Amino acid sequence: MKPVPPDEGDTGSGGIPLETTVALDGKDGCIARARRLTGDFLARVRRRHGLPVSARAVDLSQLVVSELVTNALRYAPGPVLLQLRVADDTVEIAVWDTDPVLPVPRASDPTRVGQHGLEIVRAVAQRVDAVREPVGKRIVAHLGLSDVRRSGHGTG
Image (cartoon, rainbow, N blue to C red; front, side, top):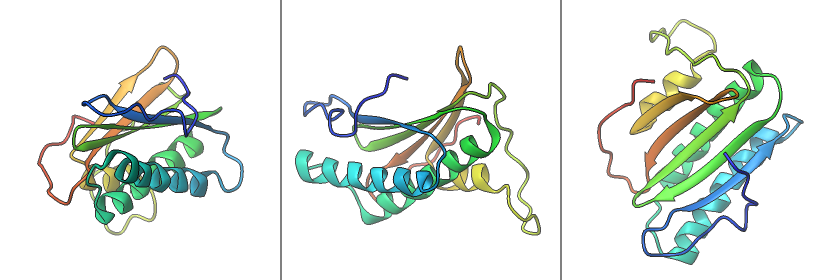
């Protein structure tokens, strides 16, 4: 996943994906920064490119970013990359980290304290994919830009 500076990733119209990528170092404020970047990116997509982005899509995207980045920082050594990409009517949120072990969804357990991140992401995303990379792994969550929810989850 090649880093793209936050204001240089937008590409244009005609179905060409709009994207931005940022490296996160895990320092204080890192997760809040990732959430802010996500909100700013989707606001730019709405404003500059006229795509309909609902307030719900922004909220859910920020929630997914928070959960995926938190997991990457907690369980993998080294840097984390966050990539936001819009294609058609979907935002793809990809988080890369250095740990090659793919996450395993846990059974729902309302009495369990913590470790609900992937469960939350799978509940709100249209699809979630986990892919091993030559170094580490990439988790990609696909969310609709509008309030219309389509069904389908990835294999995780």
